[in-house]
Length: 158
Image 1 (cartoon, rainbow, N blue to C red):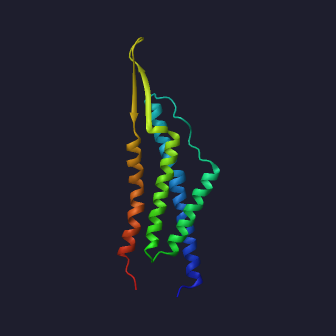
Image 2: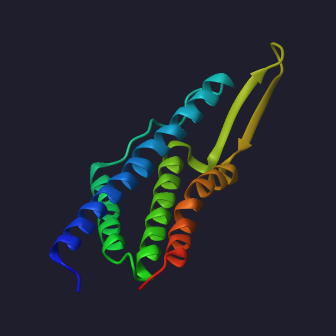
Image 3: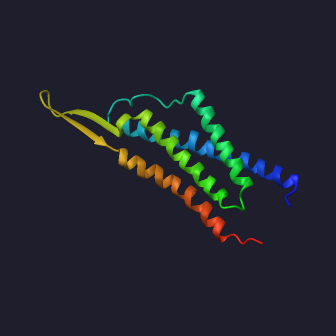
C-alpha cells in the first residue's frame, strides 16, 4: 500500500521533472538554436533571419502544462510500464516544440545569401539545413526517449 507521503513526494518530484523539461526544451534548446543560427547568419553575411525567437503566451502555457502533467504522471506511475512511456512522450513533446520554434525562426530551413564577385556578377547561395536541424534535435531528444526504458527494465522489482 502506498502512503500519502510517498504520493506527495512523487508529485513534487514530478513537478521538478516537468520544470526541468520546460527549462530544457522551452528555453535552453530554442535559445541555443537562435544563438547558433544568428552567429552563422552574421558570420556568413546572410542578413537577418526571418524573425527573432518568440512563442505566444497561450502556446507557452499549454506546453508548460503538458510538461508538468506528463512529469507528475510519469513519476506517480514510475514502477509501471506507463512511467517510462510518459517520460519518453515528454521528450518527444520537447522535440516537436523545438522543431516548431526553429521552423518559426527559419521557415523551410533555408539559409540564403548573395555574394558580389565583381560589379556585374553575383553568386547566390541557398543551403537547406532542415534535415541537419531535425537530426540534431533528434540526437538531443534520443537519450530522453531511450533512458527511461533502460532504467525501467534494469530496475529490480519486489
